[in-house]
Amino acid sequence: EDVMKNYDDFIQEFKSKNRVTPYAQARMNSIIERKKTRISSGVNHHDMQQTYNWAKIEGETAMDNSIVGMVHARNNPDEMAIQMNNGLQAVRWQGMTQKLDADTIAAMEKDYKSKAHEAVLNSFIQEGSLQAGEYFEKHKDEIKPEAQARYIGAIKNEEMKYQARNLASDIVSTSANEQEAVKKAESIKDINLSDQVVSRVKRHYSEQEQYKRQEEREALNSFYTKAVEAAQNGGTLSYDDIPDNLDPQTKLGLMNYVNKNGQPETDDEVWETLYNMSVNNAQGFAKEDLNKYRGFLSDGEYKSFIKKQQEIQEGKFYTQIKDD
Image (tube, rainbow, N blue to C red; front, top):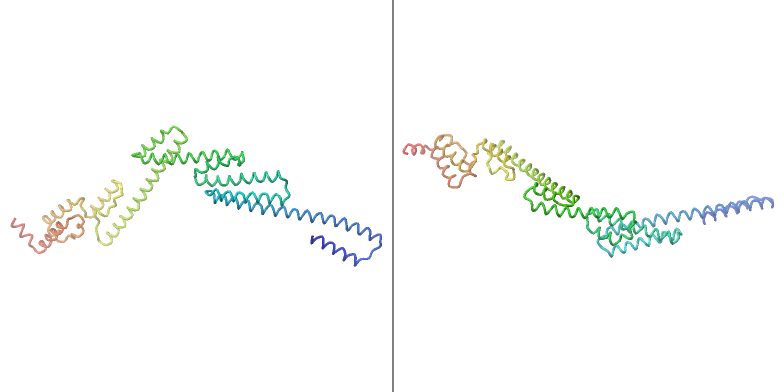
């Protein structure tokens, strides 16, 4: 409208400033009208194209928002119905704004419904929900035929995954070891299901082994830290410093390490070693730090050895041996 008004204003100004003969005036008016018709046609086409583009963008945005709303509300049927209705209204508004015929708008509605249901199904399948199968059965007539086969396969696969998870969990909980569990999983008649269960069982034991190794690494690091501190500070280690959650071979290696650093193997051997030392190496016993053996002795045994150590230091112990 503004373009045409500007054109008319320009022509009036041109006529007022330019005087021509009647013949030329007639020719000029004819040219002006033809030009005006072409401009008007171009302006109308441009306006229609702009309106079409605007309606397309706004309509698609509204439809996309409604589909997102349906996905977010996938566990709330009432809210999903509201979002579906909002999307269909956007489809109809877009069609009317673009002056589309009823059949085209109906086709757009059908396409929107399929996209919306597919988005919800994709979400259910992605999170491994068994609701996917139920939702598909309820709305499959509104989903495009070419997409239905894909969802039938995906839903079947998710249901098998769910079944495989449960079976693998039951098998692991009722088996004494990995070999027994794998054997049970391999005995499942459905080959595809069996393969999935075997894979999950093996993964369970693999993860369990990895977790065990991680725990052992952390326990060994703790022991090594104590060993370094003991070496730096002139201290000693005992079996109490050896972590419990180690395999027997590793634990035996640490026990040997502790033994080499002056610790006997058992509580009885601690007592025997100290007793023999007090009899056969009295001077060495008199200088021995009995505190490092405290964890292997009862309170009475510890006090008895302390008393012997004092007697040796004072010379009384030699007199008792002589009398004996």
